[in-house]
Length: 249
Image 1 (cartoon, helix red, strand yellow):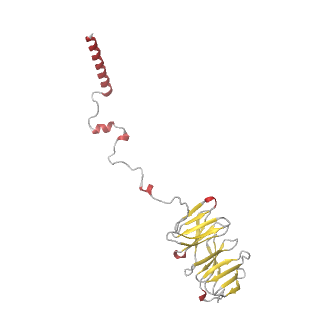
Image 2 (spheres, rainbow, N blue to C red):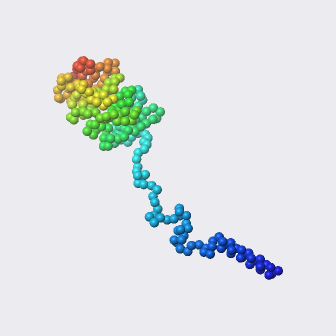
């Protein structure tokens, strides 16, 4: 009986040894690192150059994709009661436009251009922007979000006040030279129509800059012009003449 059990145990051991030899061969595994590298899968093999970056420096450049709320250091504002649009200008040159249903949009800033004045052309998509830098004036289409053009004034003149002409795309501007000029916001082109302080209004050089230009909503052809010193004029746009003159001293 003992011989029989010993034979069974020896046969089982022989079978296990033969099975291991069949599966693994005479060598139970590679002995060197090079052989380990050859038998390892591709995703485990290390490259001599080191790990490769899956990103580039361009993927991590900070930029403004979305802005919500009011701008910091707001300097001026404009409102169109017909379209229900509110525009805010900032010291950085950025413009934020707010519309109905909490819709808002950001217009790119003009580098170094602080905004000093904004004006909507009523019931039109045009926004007139006056910058402090070189008294630069730009016109934007707030529906298409595009820059229409720049207004070219004489180098010696700067914009002091603005007023839209009723039911048109034209805007009246008063300058530091005391003149009143007209430009078309749709094209950003300056008209040849000009109300001169001296030749048209008979004012001397001491009258100062043009501070106020206001149109009459009941009579679109009538314009009220106020200068810094001693003069307030009622001007007829069609007849190109002074209707009334008011002296303050």
